[in-house]
Image (cartoon, rainbow, N blue to C red):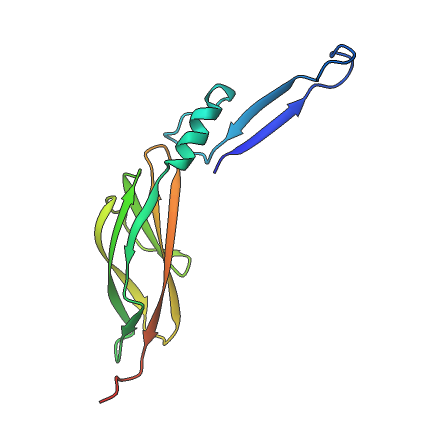
Length: 145
């Protein structure tokens, strides 16, 4: 999401009855590879926000059985558009590695009987991001017989 700043001229520069002049500039998330967005590219930036990176698929089982081990890995199928890579976080901690824009990943979860939030972040070449998340319950009770 970009931030639009508008400044108005002050003082006696404007003629009586005329509107003050304005200058518009935008700011987007910083990236070492991203060019700055200037007032001349505001329309293009607004259009690209609508077409920015998105996680379009994030398939995870809502409940994971884990009896015995301290942790378990869950399979996650994911797909991103407008991105060249994806990272995952579990409970606000980044999972090591950067993955391609689509595929499957094995994500580690603690077997503590709690609910864990898995976040997939799609990252575009220019540094823009799109995020999707799902909650997963770790079940430490044996299934009924």
